Amino acid sequence: MKVGLLFGSFNPVHMGHLILGNYMAYNTDLSAVWYVVSPQNPFKASSSLLHEFDRLHMVSLAIDKNDRLGISDIEFKMPKPSYTIDSLTYLQDKYPAYQFVLIIGEDNLPSFPKWKNYERILDFFEVYVYPRSGNPESPLKNHPKIKFIPAPLLDISATLIRDCVRANKSITYMVPEVVEQYIHQKRFWV
Image 1 (cartoon, rainbow, N blue to C red):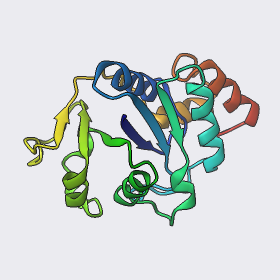
Image 2 (image 1 turned 90 degrees about the vertical axis):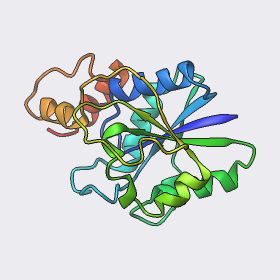
Image 3 (image 1 turned 30 degrees about the horizontal axis):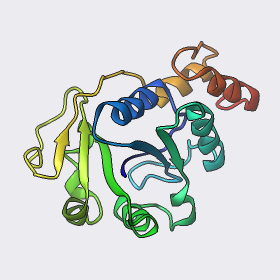
């Protein structure tokens, strides 16, 4: 089974994440896409993050009805900050029958050589890159393990959603209804 891995803070998960995962699961050679909730991204400050279990729960609520989308909390059990190569290696050891593919945005490709052991990622894993606008060209764009996927672009961000919640503005249609209800119920970002 070929499984795409979409790593992220998902603070909160939004329709852009869900459309991307669904597109990858149904319009590529992937059998499934797993959302890997990262407790702490080594390139981002953790002060604005909700608790990892709340973010995991929101992803779980959002993908509940889609059997091709899954969720993983493996990085919760790993040293922080978590590094993609360590998570990929752990998952490959745990599920040796699966073939894992890393899914990243085109905006991450120029900085990909700064990732811990990025060469090992490219030695052992394919990388599916979805489009993001306004990115400098990467020297990795012609690498044989890099595959560009023409997934739909939805210009929405978790930052925008958090800002809307703080300003008491609507986030309807930016997140699934169950996620919106959970955010309001827990009074996140107010």
